[in-house]
Image: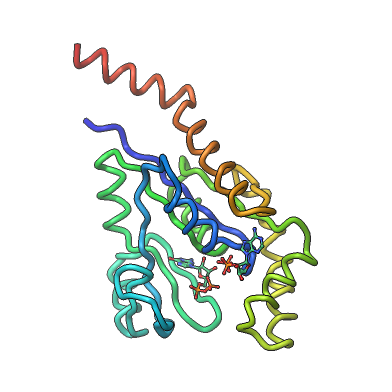
Length: 204
Ligand SMILES: Nc1nc2c(ncn2[C@@H]2O[C@H](COP(=O)(O)OP(=O)(O)O)[C@@H](O)[C@H]2O)c(=O)[nH]1
Ligand SMILES: Nc1ncnc2c1ncn2[C@@H]1O[C@H](COP(=O)(O)OP(=O)(O)O)[C@@H](O)[C@H]1O
């Protein structure tokens, strides 16, 4: 039997840089894990590609998949559904490959209930002033929405203690290196190494 892969969950408040750091991780050298493409009901943005950035679906289609038990987790965020298709994650882990999710906090907490041995990483801003300037700098939100997002972000930051690791996103390259180091060290945890040895011994 193949050893199951690791499920790695990167989460954190809106605007902290999850998407930016995730893309930088996948563009960097020496990463050997699979990205789980999420499903969403939000409109496709310019430059986005179906099946690359997201699987874009209608609310009805999304709700059918929820009802059929086909989502590992989902959350409603800014008026749209976002979720992780279950089959891809399960099949890929079963093949012994690591799977990487980049999702918001509510969804990450649901995954934690289901996959206790996942690696849960919380990306934090250096401070709240910097978080606000990143949300403002993105230029997609009006002032009232920014204030609302900041309130949500504070509540999200309160969830940090439920995670295994907190990584500061001060500089993207540093955050990428820290996350890669965490994943490498998780592979070296005694329980996983013992499992690998037992398997090797059985194959002798
Ligand atoms: N729960 C959950 N959140 C997701 C999923 N995919 C993306 N998200 C999160 O949904 C939020 C909104 O994503 P998006 O609309 O792409 O906007 P942006 O990342 O804020 O530019 C981000 O915090 C993502 O991390 C998913 O499958 N499940
Ligand atoms: N380490 C960083 N330093 C400065 N700006 C950053 C950093 N990481 C991300 N950003 C910027 O912050 C904004 C929010 O990043 P984004 O990846 O969209 O966040 P999230 O996916 O968490 O909502 C973007 O404009 C992005 O370019």
